[in-house]
Image (cartoon, rainbow over all chains, first blue to last red):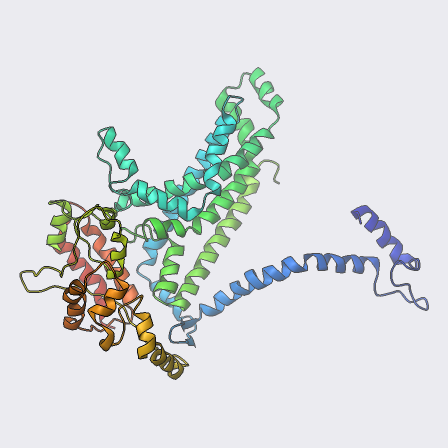
Length: 325
Length: 184
């Protein structure tokens, strides 16, 4: 039923008995419970029920359980599950490693988001030109997105090791490359770059779609008015693709906070704790050290950070996203 | 540790951390590993042998291995688990297990048993290195938070893997980091 047809039927249902065979006719002048509106609502709820049930069961319930677990000391090996109240939260505040872990997480997220969005936008602008070979390069930059994450990371691990492919190439140029994944300064940069190269294609495609939606006559008009390339980009391109910039920044920020496999394969959080990001620390606490209660507490912290950042980005959209009021 | 550090960075005798040098591909002169991995040498194009670790200035050395079948005392079904463990390691089942791992029963821990599942190794080699090594070995107590301890040691040792590292200072740092854990 189209929305307009539904509206008409609802209006009719309020004042008149419905025709026989079209639902539940009124009995003895009393209005049937099953008005068209209620019936439509029921159909609507039934249609979203599978999704709602799945979300409730696999998203909301685990989310609630994480809060519950965070107030317990849970040893799966010993089979003990004891209520400890706010003990895990006190431990969180006193955790000497947490400052370094949060610092590493912030550095990874900031590096990834800035590099990913900037590179994706530059690639999208370059590949939006009507030049030969753009389809080929679009495919090249997008293809890592569909490659298995672990396979991609393992190959990069070989390339980045001390006697790996990258240092081999640098050696040809007479440069003695560092031990990328073991150096305090280079490990985090390496992990960020590997992750950016893996996922930049996705944001590139989104930017490309947004760029192609910018009307060409705006550029022509601006050019006639004497606007240079940078002004055209700043005054036309950026405002018109700002909804996509918002979307990609939210996706990338949230994704950056969930990074795990790359760290597990490339550095295991090292050297020292320099690449131990929050999710990897959480994994160590819960699954390596068997502090499941404390792991759940770290999950609550992660949830709070992701929620805060998403709300902040969403609120900020009014300030810089075009056509948002 | 000074010896290790010098071997990696001065003598270049050991591959540095983060470098894959595969003995089985012929990239390294020596490796310390499980005997089952000898099967990877089926098509080796180089000569090789299985030998005990050389003695050092303070006597014989060994590696710490970890393998075991156990029952958690605090588990809700500890008795059932102990029964299962007894079944799993009875003479007949232990013999079957010996096809994959060194068997848990002393009576079956012989060079002949191990030779059956490691055809590339001679019984004499197995006797000299594996059986004698286990006989002389000692069972060490494990820390209840071993995984956390290992991770802390690993992270605190990372500064050692630089050419200019101060070995003594790094090791002092490792001790400081793990001291609170050892106290519990």
